[in-house]
Picture (cartoon, rainbow, N blue to C red):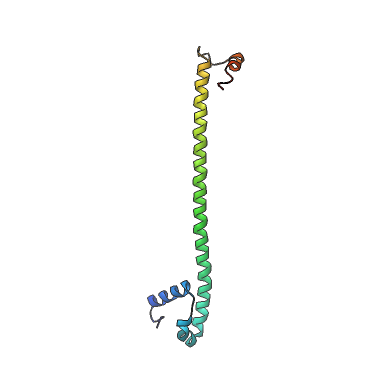
Length: 115
Protein backbone atom coordinates (compact mmCIF):
# COMPACT_ATOMS: atom_id res chain seq x y z
CA UNK A 1 0.00 0.00 0.00
CA UNK A 2 3.02 2.32 0.39
CA UNK A 3 4.04 1.98 -3.26
CA UNK A 4 0.65 2.26 -4.98
CA UNK A 5 1.35 5.67 -6.56
CA UNK A 6 4.42 7.83 -7.24
CA UNK A 7 3.89 10.41 -4.43
CA UNK A 8 3.29 7.66 -1.86
CA UNK A 9 6.35 5.77 -3.08
CA UNK A 10 8.50 8.91 -2.89
CA UNK A 11 7.31 9.61 0.64
CA UNK A 12 7.95 5.99 1.60
CA UNK A 13 11.49 6.14 0.21
CA UNK A 14 12.04 9.39 2.14
CA UNK A 15 10.86 7.68 5.33
CA UNK A 16 13.21 4.77 4.68
CA UNK A 17 16.12 7.18 4.12
CA UNK A 18 15.43 9.13 7.31
CA UNK A 19 14.77 6.09 9.48
CA UNK A 20 15.74 2.82 7.81
CA UNK A 21 13.66 0.50 9.98
CA UNK A 22 11.97 -1.95 7.64
CA UNK A 23 9.64 -3.70 10.10
CA UNK A 24 6.54 -1.87 8.83
CA UNK A 25 7.48 -2.79 5.24
CA UNK A 26 7.93 -6.52 5.88
CA UNK A 27 4.83 -7.55 3.86
CA UNK A 28 5.64 -5.63 0.61
CA UNK A 29 9.31 -6.64 0.84
CA UNK A 30 8.57 -10.33 1.32
CA UNK A 31 6.29 -10.34 -1.74
CA UNK A 32 8.84 -8.62 -4.01
CA UNK A 33 12.55 -9.50 -3.60
CA UNK A 34 13.56 -7.02 -6.33
CA UNK A 35 12.14 -4.27 -4.13
CA UNK A 36 14.51 -5.35 -1.33
CA UNK A 37 17.49 -5.01 -3.66
CA UNK A 38 16.25 -1.61 -4.87
CA UNK A 39 15.78 -0.30 -1.30
CA UNK A 40 19.21 -1.51 -0.19
CA UNK A 41 20.87 0.19 -3.18
CA UNK A 42 18.72 3.28 -2.68
CA UNK A 43 19.65 3.57 1.00
CA UNK A 44 23.35 3.04 0.29
CA UNK A 45 23.58 5.58 -2.52
CA UNK A 46 21.23 7.96 -0.73
CA UNK A 47 23.36 7.81 2.40
CA UNK A 48 26.52 8.60 0.45
CA UNK A 49 24.72 11.41 -1.38
CA UNK A 50 23.41 13.00 1.82
CA UNK A 51 26.82 12.58 3.44
CA UNK A 52 28.51 14.28 0.47
CA UNK A 53 25.93 17.07 0.47
CA UNK A 54 26.40 17.79 4.18
CA UNK A 55 30.18 17.67 3.85
CA UNK A 56 30.03 20.11 0.94
CA UNK A 57 27.77 22.54 2.78
CA UNK A 58 29.93 22.49 5.90
CA UNK A 59 33.15 22.88 3.89
CA UNK A 60 31.69 25.79 1.93
CA UNK A 61 30.63 27.48 5.17
CA UNK A 62 34.10 27.07 6.66
CA UNK A 63 35.72 28.44 3.50
CA UNK A 64 33.38 31.47 3.48
CA UNK A 65 34.17 32.25 7.12
CA UNK A 66 37.89 31.89 6.46
CA UNK A 67 37.67 34.22 3.45
CA UNK A 68 35.76 36.79 5.54
CA UNK A 69 38.46 36.58 8.22
CA UNK A 70 41.21 37.06 5.63
CA UNK A 71 39.36 40.08 4.22
CA UNK A 72 38.98 41.57 7.71
CA UNK A 73 42.69 41.11 8.42
CA UNK A 74 43.60 42.69 5.08
CA UNK A 75 41.33 45.65 5.81
CA UNK A 76 42.88 46.04 9.27
CA UNK A 77 46.42 45.99 7.82
CA UNK A 78 45.41 48.57 5.21
CA UNK A 79 43.97 50.83 7.91
CA UNK A 80 47.18 50.55 9.98
CA UNK A 81 49.29 51.26 6.88
CA UNK A 82 47.27 54.40 6.10
CA UNK A 83 47.57 55.59 9.71
CA UNK A 84 51.35 55.03 9.61
CA UNK A 85 51.57 56.88 6.31
CA UNK A 86 49.57 59.80 7.69
CA UNK A 87 51.62 60.03 10.92
CA UNK A 88 54.89 59.77 8.97
CA UNK A 89 53.81 62.56 6.62
CA UNK A 90 52.87 64.80 9.56
CA UNK A 91 56.22 64.13 11.25
CA UNK A 92 58.14 64.79 8.03
CA UNK A 93 56.25 68.05 7.48
CA UNK A 94 57.01 69.09 11.07
CA UNK A 95 60.72 68.31 10.58
CA UNK A 96 60.85 70.08 7.19
CA UNK A 97 59.28 73.50 7.86
CA UNK A 98 60.94 75.11 4.78
CA UNK A 99 59.25 72.50 2.51
CA UNK A 100 62.59 71.52 0.92
CA UNK A 101 61.61 67.88 0.59
CA UNK A 102 64.46 66.54 2.68
CA UNK A 103 65.42 66.29 6.34
CA UNK A 104 69.00 66.16 7.60
CA UNK A 105 70.34 63.29 9.66
CA UNK A 106 71.04 65.67 12.55
CA UNK A 107 67.40 66.77 12.62
CA UNK A 108 66.25 63.14 12.63
CA UNK A 109 68.65 62.30 15.48
CA UNK A 110 67.35 65.26 17.50
CA UNK A 111 63.74 64.06 17.10
CA UNK A 112 64.43 60.36 17.47
CA UNK A 113 61.99 60.01 20.38
CA UNK A 114 59.16 61.37 18.14
CA UNK A 115 59.86 58.71 15.57
